[in-house]
Image 1 (tube, rainbow, N blue to C red):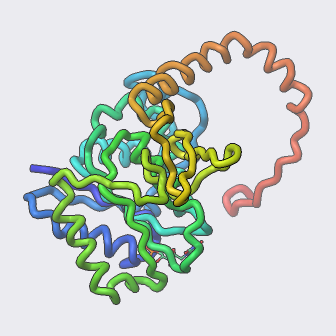
Image 2: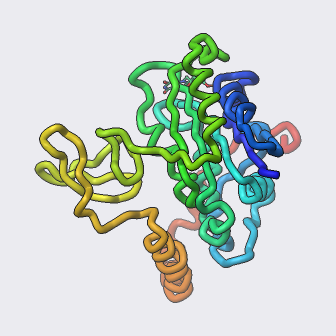
Length: 282
Ligand SMILES: Cc1cc2nc3c(=O)[nH]c(=O)nc-3n(C[C@H](O)[C@H](O)[C@H](O)COP(=O)(O)O)c2cc1C
């Protein structure tokens, strides 16, 4: 039986993220085992940058709920993410989870090609900011197949239900989750990854900040990336970066460690750190 995991990254009970994730999952025609995680109920600490997880078979050593979440994602046949826009980007807890994926290329064989839907409610037209491109990074790192990245205007808790078209669309996503549907970039989006923001390089040349592809803007302002030979999320580039460059960094660090320690020394005693006084420490 297929396993489907819903990942809700909002504290709001019965908010738009939760409701739409549930609507999608509820309409999957295949018999499946459904599970939901509310990420904000769990503890996800910052990445310690220890690089331990870069070695195959090393779980993240940070003691929190990350390993539980990633195991659930790895064993699921499909992932449905509901994450609202907070201050022009995705909810910060989603970024916290994404930052913990340094070891992702050691287990992306479990997630590769599996369908992933992102539903992203936002409250204010024009305040979507960089949220779309930022939320696509996680499924890209996991080499999942993006079925849709649906940004939906809904502000109040449950407001997405006021428009019956939203419910129909969520149901269609559920019905089509396992039937091969794949996200196709719109005409003004990056044709490689679907990003809706570009970096200006020179004259009419633009770069996609997410997949790094470069191209030109045609007269109708559609991006043409047909000559680009760089694709950050291609299997080749991902292996180069994670299994090549990042591992080389470890060796470089070993070689430079003593010299770097010498340079760092002068800052060691500058201890101006402050912390709030916790009740049990006062
Ligand atoms: C702290 C905070 C920041 C927000 N920032 C934005 C924003 O920058 N742009 C926007 O369109 N909506 C913003 N919103 C509105 C939410 O995206 C919107 O209410 C959404 O429906 C919440 O989803 P939920 O019901 O699943 O929690 C913000 C909401 C909160 C609480």
